[in-house]
Amino acid sequence: MTEIEIRDLTKVYHVGDVDVHALRGVNLNIDRGEFVAIIGPSGSGKSTLFHILGGLTPPTSGKALLNGRDLTHMSDAERTKLRKTTVGFVFQKYNLLPTLSAADNIAIARDIAGKNGSETDPHFDEILKLLGIKDRLNHKPRAMSGGEQQRVAIARAIVNHPALLLADEPTGNLDTENSNAVLGILRGLNQRMGQTILMITHNPEAAAFAHRIVTMRDGRVVA
Amino acid sequence: MMLTLVGVSDGMLGEIAARSKGTGADILVRPPGSSVLALSGAMPEGVVKVVRAQPHVALATGTFVQSIGNFNSITGIYLDEFNKISGGLKYLEGGPFQKPGDLIIDDVYAQANKLGIGGHPKDLGLDWTVCGIVEQGKLSRMFAQIDYLQDKYAQKDKVSVIYVKVDDAANIPTVLDELKQKLEDYKIFTVDEFTSLISVDSIPILKQFTGVVIGLGVVIGFLVVSLSMYMAVLERTREIGILKALGASPGYIMGILLREAVVLGVVGTIAGILMTYGTRSLIHVFAPTWTATIVKAWWWKAGLIALAAALIGALYPGFKAAKQDAIEALAYD
Image (cartoon, rainbow over all chains, first blue to last red):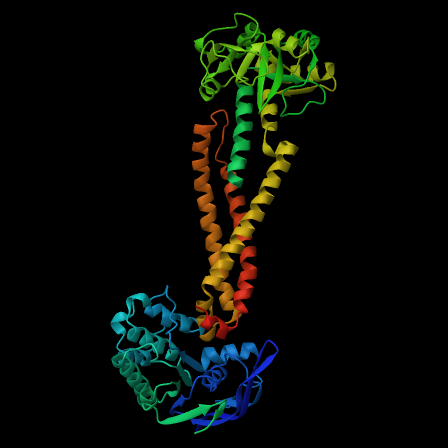
């Protein structure tokens, strides 16, 4: 079943008097439960596609359906709701809130989604076990390794059970051992929980963890 | 700042009121058109005789108050008469006037200006010699012989305030009514009425001054809180981007910043209250002739003003943060 359907998607940024064509007609289908890696050189449009699918910016034209909802005509408020309920993000720089503990970083995502913080979620407990961070939940990000921080970021991204997990260079700041651990976790989430994952990476070894690799160049999908 | 200024105003006025009560008088007579705060001003000394002639008046004495700048004034008195009404000045050093140009000062003024017997206070207009140091709390901080003071300031046979002692407290209303009938247009109060009038709210210029200070406090507080919140938003650009990426609505982000502003306002109020205790101690050390009190009745007013300023000050940065572009915010280092 198709989770994401993208047709002739374009995005033009206006930088001063110059129009920058970041996406020039992207076509892509991603099925529910699929783990897809997008690779491509800098400037190929990977991040722009990531931002559009994550509801962080609207496309200029074309069609982008996520769970049957068209992102093209969404208002700011609708895209905010999409980020809250349908999409989870994992970033290269982890992007944890530095003043909060790991547990609070996860809890704030639940709070934003309007879920009761004290409500127990046995399913999520299982995820925490899978991530191996249960005994690190009371630590603040500065007291955690990069690998641990990225695992917390993954936990935060999936705490509200999003339809789509978007990962932008999730191993970009990690050593090989931690990269493999994080990629193993993403694959485990995909295999055990059926989580749909779209991962952007420069690293072919990381991309090899996915079911499918999509290559982008000059704002288009080329393979 | 606001609480300290209110405390100083209240303290200074309270001290004037206490010193007026310290005279032991029951009734005060002041010249027509005179203000509550300024005890200087002049009326013919012959009025004292009119007052004395009233039934039930046990004692009456005229005083002449000469302002000498810097919030200081010298009070000219008939020492014997004043001693009879007030129960006498309590000398800590020295004694009564010996010659014209002698000055009796209270212990606070002596300590603040490092003056002893035989000392010559500076900046009092004339060359005065300290002949006695008395315990504070009666009428004035500086006393001179009334005729010498009147003469030197070309106010011969003029007095500023007449202090009246009634034979029985029960007769005070009667004497007051009689004096008001006899001395039409003169300002005549019981001492209790007079002291109750000495407050920030009953003195228009002080009320305006306090209002200006509060206004300044609000403007400065507003700017400080605005800048603090603006800096807080700027420093947390990336964090706000993270919250937006997690789906935080503009209202959610605004709520966080407004809650922070409330905490800032409450903490600021508590800190301000604590600081008034500190400034009171500093005033006691560096300006002993000034009196600052802790005006608890103003705490809630200051709290409300601080809270309102914090909330208003946080609105623009909060609005700016709520509207921030998530992608730009996430790219911020």
